[in-house]
Each structure stands twice: as C-alpha cells, then as structure tokens.
Amino acid sequence: MAFNVLNIQKLNLLVVFMTVLECWVRTSEDVVAVYYQQQEEMLDGFNEMDALAERGFFPGMSKEEREQLAKSETLAIRISNIANMVLFIAKVYASVRSGSLAIIASTLDSLLDLLSGFILWFTAFSMQTPNPYQYPIGKKRMQPLGILVFASVMATLGLQIILESVRTLVSDEDEFNLTKEQEAWVISIMLSVTLVKLLLCVYCRSFTNEIVKAYAQDHFFDVITNIIGLIAALLANYISDWMDPVGAILLALYTIRTWSITVLENVNSLVGKSAAPEYLQKLTYLCWNHHEAIRHIDTVRAYTFGSHYFVEVDIVLPSTMPLREAHDIGEALQEKLEQLPEIERAFVHLDYEFTHKPEHAQSH
Image 1: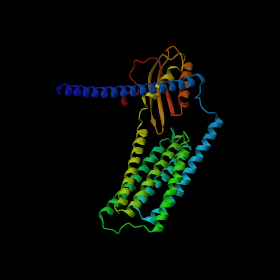
Image 2: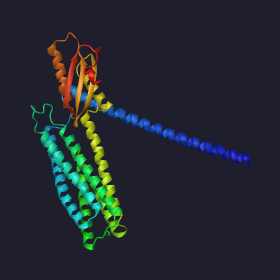
Image 3: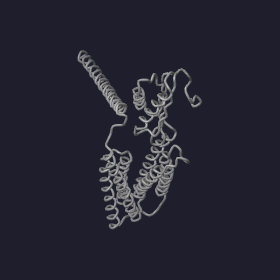
Image 4: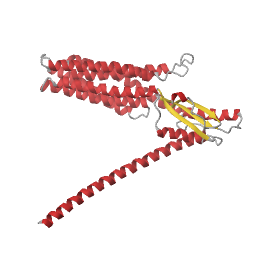
C-alpha cells in the first residue's frame, strides 16, 4: 500500500513538473516569436529608409493613385457624416417615443460621433488655411484642442445621464411601459440604425487612412451601444423597470471611458511625447546613411506636435568642410526627413565635434 502511495506521489510530482515545463516552453516560444516579429518590423523600416536614401523620395503610390485614394477617403467620410446626421435624428425620435434612458444614452453616443465628425472637418479646414504670420508653425494642434474641448462637454453630458438614471432608480416614478405601437417603432428604428452602422463599419475598414479607420471604429461602437440600449429598453418593458436606468448608466460610463482614453492620447500629443524607440532607430539609420561625410550623430529626437512629429537631429561633419557643402548636406537631410508621412517639420543642426554639452541644456 505504501509503495502504491509513493508511486502516486511521484507521478503527481512528475505531472506538475511536466506542466510547468510545458508552460515555460510555451512562454519561451512566445517571447522568441515576438522578438523575431520585432526584428522583421525593424528590417522593414530600415528597408524603407534605404529606399528613401537611395531615391531621394519616399516610395509610394503615384500622384494619380494618391488623388484617387484621397477622393475615395473623402467620399467615405462624407457618407459617414451624412449617415450620422440622419441616424441621429431617427434615434432622437426613438428616444422621444420610448422615453427610455438607455436609448437616450445611446442617442448621446450618436451625438458624440456627429459632433466629433464636425470637429474633424472644422479643424481639417482650419489647418488647410495657414497664416504664416500669425501661425508660423501651422495649426496642427487645433485638432487635439478641439477634441479636448468636445470631450469635456461629452463627459459632462454622460455624468448628467448617470445622475438622472440614479434619480430614477431611487424615486417612485411610474412604471416603464411601451405600447405595442411604440415598441414596434423603437425596435424598427434601432435595428435599422444598427444595420446601417454595421455596413458603414465594414465599408470604412477597407481603407488605411487613420481618420477613416477612426470612423469605422466609431461605427462599430455604435453597433454595440445600439444593441445594449435596445435590449435594456425591452428588458425594462417586459421584466423590471430598473434595467432601463442601469443600461443607461452602463452606456454613459462606456462613453466617459472612451473619451477619457481619447483625452489622454491628445494630451500626450500636445505636451510633446517622445516617439517610440523603434521609430527613433529608423530615423537614426536614415541619418547615418544620408552622406558619407557624416562622422557622428550626436542627437536624434522626435516628439509629438499634434498628430505629427517634430524632429531634431544633430550631425557632426568635418571641421574643414566648406560651409556651402555642409549646408547642402544638412538641407538635403532635412528634406528627406520631412518626406516621411509622420513628420511635420525637421530641424538639422550641424556641428564639427560632439564633446560639448547638449544643446538646450536648461530643458534637461
């Protein structure tokens, strides 16, 4: 009996050991896979920089292809904006007919999409009308500033929905009831809106433009909020009244959370957050292979300026090099850097040694 018990204990220990070993092997394989994926992405980035250094321009589509793609993207944005406006009116009607707080919260989310689209359009229009005297570095920060102002308003409206829902939960108001006609109207409107949003989501996801992809994400979130709002209203109508304000609270919290994340992203873009190390590697590689006369690369910085980067590069050239030649090398590097789609403006500083203190020492 003791022998059998001992064997069972050994077998259990062996099973535990093999389980731990298997988990370790799987974790190691995941780490190795991530490492090789990062290496492949880094090599792809270096190949792009090589193409830019050799050709003098960033490889990509032809002018006609870019114009055609821009027209398609503009059409997708216009369709999304028109659809948001029409569907918002339909959801306002559904909110009035039902009186459901959950559907009102879903309508609030649609208002969010409508106004955010207007902000993107207004800021894009403002950025396309530069004034080099009043705004020497452009108006790229107007978009994150507009989003911050709008997010503050939406957070306030979401908080108001939560307060109203809590008041409804603790009060002894009349029961939530929909007539058959009201129920049919609400279901048809909400399902139609959800179907249109789903089709727009699929359509906008076919583009690579970041703004159009943002519209696709908004459409997808609308599908979720519409379904939750409709389910909460129907549950409140057939099961219990408290489900409607609870659904409204969930949707309002979801809206506040979504825009809180957006606020943090835009705050980072305004305060000048550094680019990722992988992107700095690409820039350093491009600078080093720009010209054979470059002796050292002292500094490579890239930090956010709205939705794009400002880049500062310090390169070291021979002290005996003529000013004209040094200037041409620095200007050509600046033009190469500014051809990258993520870069708004590049500053190239020329030096003849790298043992001095860093420039702008007070900022460090």
